[in-house]
Length: 203
Image 1 (cartoon, one colour):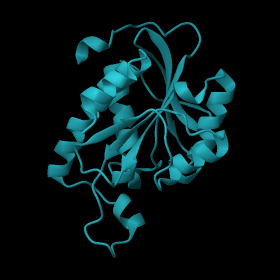
Image 2 (cartoon, rainbow, N blue to C red):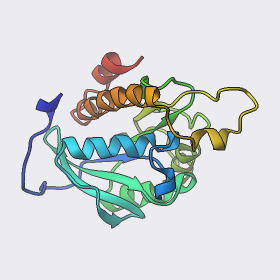
Image 3 (cartoon, rainbow, N blue to C red):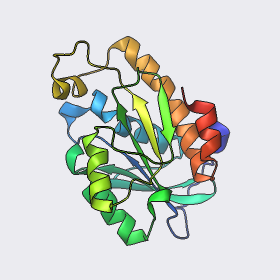
Image 4 (cartoon, one colour):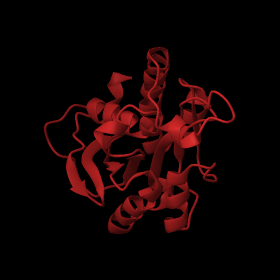
């Protein structure tokens, strides 16, 4: 997968063509929790692109990168999950990026760790971050990558406690495998090959 990313000491030039947004919660206490699978994927993506997500803009930590020959903005909203749409909508409006070129990466409790599911559009699926993005943008036509984080261990387990819990060591190995696949999928999606990404990585 490493051939997908070209190392460059120069900042990408030209207009931003895609927003790539990983959802999560800011703060040390939320690091490596299930709800932060989007942030974890963005960190890996930035590393592979030789980019840094360290500037504050659009209520987010952002960084410029080149992916698939295009300039993209990498985003980690700092609004807390339930208000993710504030950050995404600001960036979309500023760069005049349509939903179809706004890729959202987030956790999904309906998939086990290690699995991912790519979709061109769809409902919020009960995910509050996605729900807020749809509400504020008025659209559900943004492509998304759902990162499996596992279902609650039992029906009466509190959902908030579950998504804010840490991965086990075995689950981390599965998650990191999925993160690698998600990063490869993002590159294909930016090249306009979402169908290929779906066929290759949906499980």
